[in-house]
Image (cartoon, rainbow, N blue to C red; front, side, top):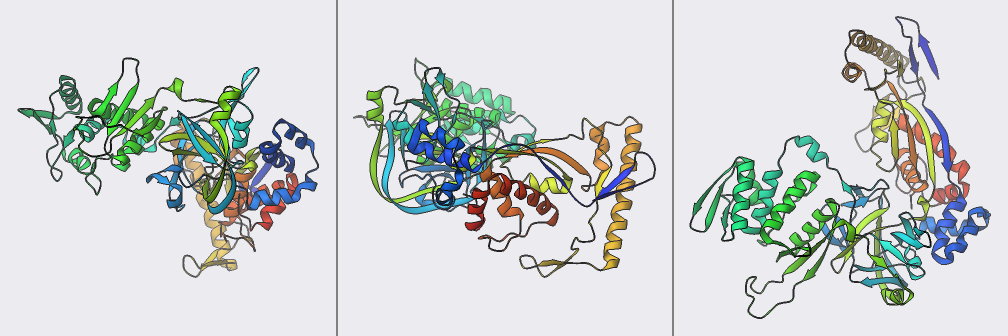
Length: 573
């Protein structure tokens, strides 16, 4: 409910509720059935779009509880801790994902799968693809049609047995918050760091030293050092980089516990410009480019090879890793295994799978598998995985082929909570471009005010009449004063983006919010307090008010899926 107070214009409004309206949706239980049955019925699954979903409650329950495309033991996944074999994944990691807008970002797992499996697996094996997944596992692929290609979408692996597709070896757009925070050009320093990893050494964080004979390497060192503001001194074929303390510390961290060279993990989350410079430094040391433009990087460090593979995908490219065959008389690397990282250009990032019937029979097969299978659920529904050094973007979940779009008006402190869920698309009004309306939140008399107990075991209880009166009076007074200051600055010609800084987080903002059913279920599991939840949640009351309105529409539009969600302990699939 809301009320207004008459004072200086404009009139200030106080509310104790939120607005949530379903603007549009493409969501029904039949959407889930259609997406699931594509794996077994192909184009005939179109008949399920108009099917009576009530006859398939059992299938929806199964999908909610058990069905999840999985990988075999030999597949690895890219995490913020590096490449990990699936059996070693704990779920505490962040996973590299690709969003619908082609944005690459780290996301945490909402569910971890490690389970025994005995049955058929789809095997994709060719020069630029190596995968072994359950038949219902979703692949990020584009199907070949008479008209050309379908748009990229998540399709069950079993479809690769039936038609030609393209898959994604890499690509995407990486944006880093770290680059925005630094705000300075550190490209030359990152180029030197990459060059040090390949050709340099230091003793306990001392002066970075290079032993160089090739003119191109010597020129590269001098050029980047000049751009970074460092000096280079020389003694014979040894070159000393007189860098600052920060660079020397980074150089010290370029060794793992076994003494192998690595990229310091924190440097891999830099922005495109710095990562591109880092790659140029690596290539200037141990890289090579063939006459045809083929780029390769060699190293004896398995971890570093994987990091170069991560660099490649964050730069919108992709790379495969293979062991180099030894040749007689080649003692440059001693007895160590040598890894060759082949970096592909953008035009080569979409290998064709099963282009002809004959090729498909060789490249896509069904194998019997007995063992453990693994996966995680992430908000974007995609993961970057590799098998035998060959990577690909993959995905999962039949609950993502639908959408809800809501119009929501709520206090800014609620939006701060809401936008922590990076599983939705937002389009919010901007205080930079329009004058914010004087609508503020004040807790209603039913809102519990007092916290009892200690963190992790506390409860909220009603306040006294005096406490409610105090909260009400202070909120109204502070909001009225803040908005008056906002108006004064606007009238004085101050820009909206500056004037708004005095406004409290109780002011209302509005946005359009779009999400699919799986993302919505994840939101509800975390932002509602319900008996019977497998993972109990204790949300702030104001965001729970938003979640309750979402839940009403979800239950109305997808009653069978909602019932399965409830029966599954309110755990998102």
